Length: 106
Image: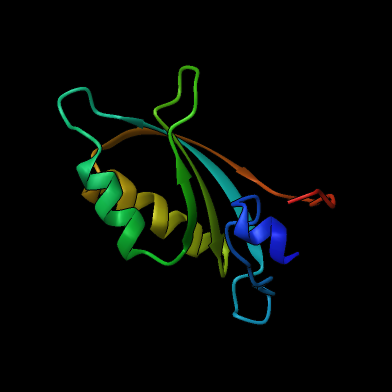
C-alpha cells in the first residue's frame, strides 16, 4: 500500500457517506444546458456554494454539464433546479432520479 501511495497510484482516501442519515435520500442526475451568452462562472459558483450538488462535470456530447445531486424531497429538487435557472445561467435541464445504485469499483 505504501509503495502504491508513494508511486502516485493511490492519490488519496475517501469516506463513504450515508446521505439518508443526512436527510437527503434522493439522488438525481441533472443534465444542464447553459444560455449561449453566459459562461460557466455562474454554474461554478452555485456548484461550489450549494452542498446539494455533490458532483459537477463537463462531459462530451450535447450537454454542457452533468450534475449529481442529493436532495431531501422532490420539492427540494425543484428548488435546486429553480436556483440553477435563476442564478447559474441555465436555459434547460433534463433530470433523472436514481432508483437503484449498483456496486462499482470506485
